[in-house]
Image 1: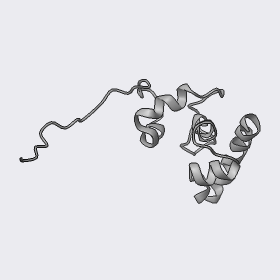
Image 2: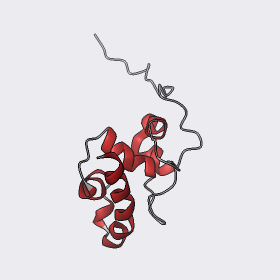
Image 3: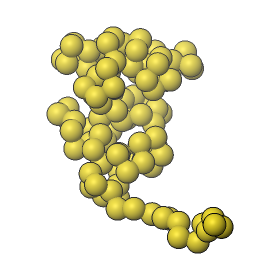
Image 4: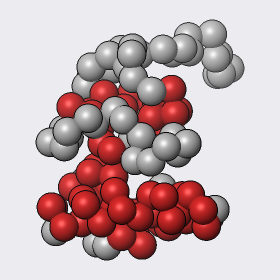
Length: 105
């Protein structure tokens, strides 16, 4: 029996909602789940960046805690988002991470 790859799925509708209008960086990281990341956020301004010049949204910080099991600031900034790889970015993002840790943990 020969294998045929002629019937490939090239796109699927998102089960969680449209990604239209969401930040491109969020969609690149979460794909079709990007809408869920924003929809489940309870924070104010969920699609705004955590700090100027950083392409990680406030919803992503919240999602890191509520859905990915982040336990502290370092877990969010260094492990979940990898912002901490650039020290100046880390310094700018830590206050937002502290805000989410204080509110959610």
